[in-house]
Image (cartoon, rainbow over all chains, first blue to last red; front, side, top):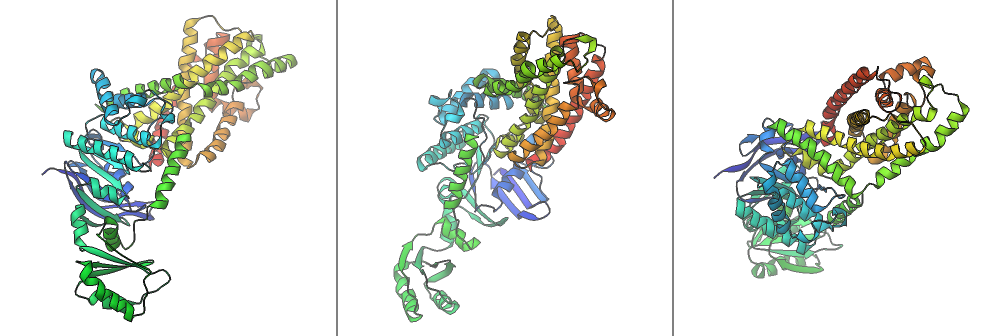
Length: 332
Length: 257
């Protein structure tokens, strides 16, 4: 199987202080959708910027389709397309003109240009507004236009940095349906960053969880979820504290695979909640711990993240912030 | 291959600027207010005082029209750097860097695009000068040459702002820096008064001030018809452009990081 991205012991240090990437090893096969999942500041964008030849690594090596990012940047730039996290279209010209400018930059021959642009517009459902100025577009339309730009050439690999940031669920769905069929039709590898677990869960073939500049775990969504157990019992402990001995006692139970504590929550990973619950409840009762709420769920990628990175992927604040920034930029 | 991509990139940047102007020329109209005020108010007042000796005794308003014309196109080009900072905030610059064209083509292309704006700015100011009965040399070739010079020099001035922008992380800071670059260039040039009138220190500065060479060339072509300095002016502008493009390309690295 062809390897699309190969990264070895990659380190990136900014201003000899901030260690954004701290020894990344990663192999991504060609033709798949690959998600790099992690919170803000984990190093996702830095990795994409190195792979797209914008930044040079401090040490280590990275290859895109066998080409070295430091020495063969020019060749790599012919194979890839890229959608940065920030807004990357001109707002004072129309959507069609944006695509036309990029089509010319990419050197698409003039007799193919119109058809290629029309296909990209059609695919992202922007045909109706093609001749309107981009400043009149909604956030979702802008993002779709940016992805349409990346679809103009049929790249071997597409790098998408938070492709659906700030989009509502229906816009998100359209974008991913189109990306998925684009991937199938042309055998394009899709490499994307996200902090939305549902996005990684639904649309990727492989996921790598990144935290503090390190890959902490990788596998398919199913493998990752399976790795932490069949079910999770969550006890909400508002105002209660739980001591280490109680945790040890719960951990020793046969039915329990692991115990994870977050701020106000005790999460017990078990194979089967129905049989494990009475025993866990008994320990809590003896220890005098009162749970306000108990819930049983199937593991999500957030739980996977919690287990391997030690915190939850906090998303809400971040999304509203980025949406806000994008709005500000659009208003200029 | 890279060369062809780069040349193409250059022309696409010019086309992009034309397309932007086709949709919205408001900036140019507002920017034209300042040079028009110089021509309509400042020049008649200064002429009345007769304090400034002009070469060949041409009317003062004729003398200073190329000066304020170049001042306005230079202002425009310098502030064009703002757009680059804006593009850094947004992802456009990042995306352009991931295209097959070389980084240098992106820098030069973005800089020269300001020349497109400068030409249109000039085309707004000239009719006002005509209304104020400024006498231009009626020679189409001279006229076109003057605008070619404006186009190429604007690229150099925009490159200055790219270099400055690479040090500035915010637009707000850049606004201040923009003024701080422009005003000395303008007042210590031959735009408003002949260099001979200046104290020695300003004369020395004027000799290395690119704006003086641009004004001199354009004044020769549009007003006085004295082209004896033209080769020196052209050489100075060419050196200015090349040096600034190289420096801007180097400082561009800082912009990306």
